Image (cartoon, rainbow, N blue to C red; front, top):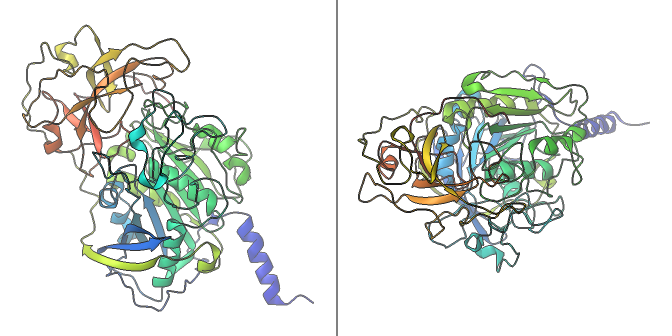
Length: 546
């Protein structure tokens, strides 16, 4: 006769394999981690900055334990991964997750990527995920010949010998040794979850992952590799490199978010404006030659339908469920923005992300033994006040307009030079020098694509600067007024400005002073999340659907 204990174990294991399920506070039974009953090493109500080691590499992370934390009451935990070059401190403020932790009752963690690239302009914090260091892959190189950029080779990668040079992140192990695949799962991120389970009272049925840009790619990757453990993921404007898309082996709820005007990691075309190939969202969900797709993992059937959120209509947000999915909802969302947090706002982004994630739970995974080891030599560096989600309010610029006659990158309202076109830049416009290209496929432009530092790249360098200490410099991108400018051979130059601020789209008055005339510095159009583009006014007209 089968014992009752064995029967319960069997049923729980079957439930675990069938996917996540909706969280019901009335009937929920939390999983209790080994840290329950222990005093927290992190002061409640403060953001603690700490380091820990995995496989000999030192990693930095920020953890916020809510002010009402109680050592015997299990709490959910959310990890939000920063985008490329973004520090954990900038991400914590800009993404808006931590600001909701007290009200909603969860532990908020912002891990920092590895910055082992000593080239000028760093540190370039990054995540090894979705094939970012594995080009060429099953579908060939992950970037075009024009996208080749040797400076993106990180020290942990040794000598990057792929041609073209498409590798662009650290090779340090975040979740698997190669940053892709489903074997040898361990690394920094599973070790971080394990560490918190040992230190804090974690509800092991409610562990979540999210992230933006390169961090959104990491959210997809850990979703695949840790699907038996996580309850839901929320990648924000991320994707898999072409040929590297995967799907989880069990159902895992996912919400994908992209801006209508995102050409850095586009939703509906593969080729980005800086020459990298990604997987379109539809193929991540529906599957292609490289993956069966998220819909199959989650058992989705039936027609698509509107997926309601509390933020519907805000900045034209609209979400779609891909069908009825017993393994957990599979949802794609679009909004009237670029490569940036939803609404260009910490409050709106944090609200949307937490609303979706906290809907889900998964039967306990069994604790730290499920995946990898814990971090070693965990050291607390200091404590800070947590960020507020009200820090993203727009600030008036104090720059006075200047005459643009005879200079590139001017205000379209004052007229552009003959070799320029009016191009949408962020939520505004700019006079952008047009760069010729050949008729090959993909087109090869007469400029050096992308980059995060100034170079002789074929762009005009004459600009009327508003400040003598301006460091603005031109970048060439396959960007136009469509979402597939690169494929169409539509290359233009725009001005890059520093964006150290973590508040929404606007980089602040200090950053604006690097831009000419009355233009402002705006985040949301570049691979580097600590840089913006100079843009004038606002853009009227039709929405480009993703």
